[in-house]
Length: 376
Image 1 (cartoon, rainbow, N blue to C red):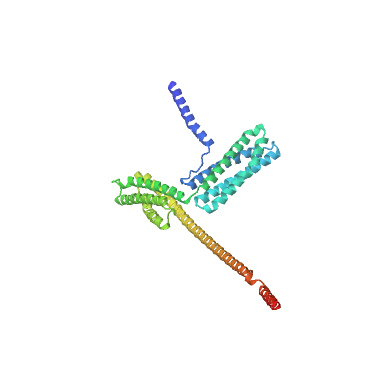
Image 2 (image 1 turned 90 degrees about the vertical axis):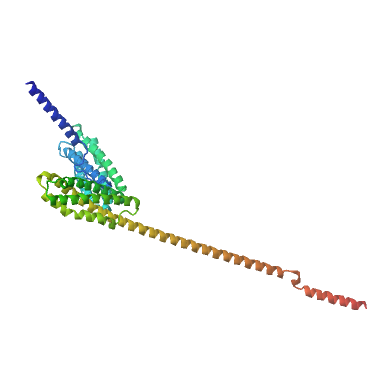
């Protein structure tokens, strides 16, 4: 009997031990989907998963207030509006995740701004609900208020992460994930390639994928090094070799998945699943390469425009200098003309040139002659 009681107690303890973490987990802000990308796009998508979680709780908690006919009509109307708008925010967050996952970054900025605006629009409604809800429903009002505060923090976090987005950093994040997946393929195929009891053709296929997955890893590391040493990022020609290798092992991997016996099926399936994830990453990385080249073209255009503006400014400066030199020459010419005129005026005003002076001398001469004649 004591053994049965002891066993029963042990079972109860185990049940409690398993239940506590489960309930604690459900109360937290874990996302239902964890996105593998470690770059800023992955961070944004994970933040948006938390946004969806928070808005879903607001949607549910506000419904308890909106649907209770015994509460004030104004309070219920506010709760209903929050209930509806939180649902809209949730849908927009889901659409935004898809666009970010597809690297539609030209749309993402505007979509984030719109989402932030929608979140801000329900701020006063949430405050009114918190202040006006009676004690009977305060638990739901507090939950709405708490999740809304969390929602605002998440939107600030999302905005910051978007501002920090950089194509080169994102490339390195994707390449690191490609390295991780190719390493897993490398490891899983080794179990099949090294087992001498398996079919030789199957082992040869596994060995081929084993070696090429290592090549993918090596090429990815080279691309990361190129990105770190080259401000322009990665060009299409540099990525083509990696892309070709990824494509070429696809058929072989499917052959492995179809022909591996039950004893090694786990390794074949893991290889198959990792390969499909690798394909997706490679396709998205190609989009980043295109974005990088577009950014490079834009940068070159901006540099050309800046150089043209600088040349125009230099030309304007040269023209201004020429105008200044011309003005100085004109001023010097004017000064010379003024000096010449002063010289001429001085010569004109000299005693030899006084008007009537010669006539006066003639008169004096005549008077002298007359005086001499008279004396005789």
